[in-house]
Picture 1 (cartoon, rainbow, N blue to C red):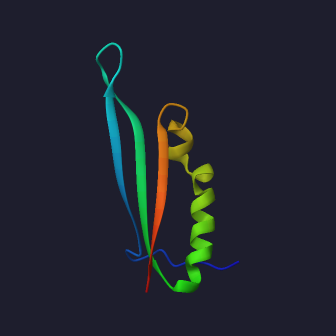
Picture 2: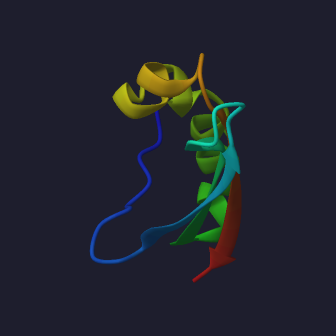
Length: 80
């Protein structure tokens, strides 16, 4: 199995959320989107995309909120 180096700032993420008012007027988070940016060798792209496709199932935060908040993510690959 090929390992991708995601250390030293090579993997970053920007997270945005959308808030709406519930029926009782309280603000609640309805949607979260995470944009991952990975700087890696071109040969790492396939591995990175495969990992991105399954990481949510192993992410404690995603697993904790997925039934209440729509969570999406994307991966931007930057070749080194």
